[in-house]
Amino acid sequence: MTRPRLVVVLGGAVVTIATASLTALMLHSGGVKPSDSSTANRPSVMIPIAPLRAELPGGTLAAVAEMVLRYYDVPKVHPVIAWQKASLGSVGGFLPPISYQCSIVGVMSHLCSIDCRACDLLPTDVRSMVEVLHRYAAISHELVGQGTPGLLLKPRLGGLSSEEILGEINRERPIVILLKAPKAPRFALVVGYRDSNPLSLVINDPSDGDDARQGPKEETPNLQIVVTRASIEHSWIGTIRILE
Image (cartoon, rainbow, N blue to C red):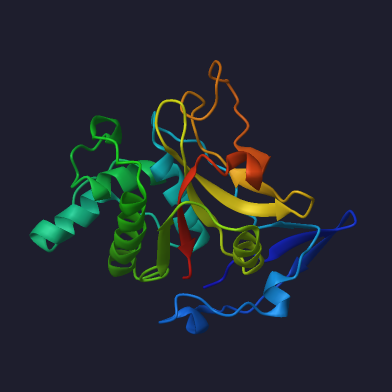
């Protein structure tokens, strides 16, 4: 699997760093003793994952899942193909175009409709996100024959410590987080940090505006925000670490 390199900002200069995969070390143990290179503080680190807006109201699960699945090279699967294969053993016919987020909803909702907006929203909880990432990656690999056949995920309640965050981002592993919000919980993706005191996190926040932030919905919301870890500590209710 080919993934983007880490982007590290050192005193205003941008440096790219290629790091070896630690997948083998992660198996069975669920973790690995941090090495000096993976946990060393850097002034600023960004995993190059473009932020995406949720296409459906309250659809932050599908938006964050798309960011994660694309990062790990999981091809998009048309839900019609997935369910024809599952029920008939073959596929055929005209397939209308569909977005990645709609494909996630369609595949996970047993093809309730060609139009994903007619489907029930996927539950916004950690268990549902784990199921989406596992199943979609497996179905995509079976049907397309590309990408990872599965992701090794480690869910937990609550947030991560500053040291854990640094370790994950320095290993090129984005962090799925679940946050409390005024109307309903929402998912977001930690893709970097700024090494200041206190630690600041770079977060891709796909909320449509109504779910994530107080005040009126913005026409062009800021989909990537920088917040201190302390500022979200009490609203950070769930985490999924992606060990590959």
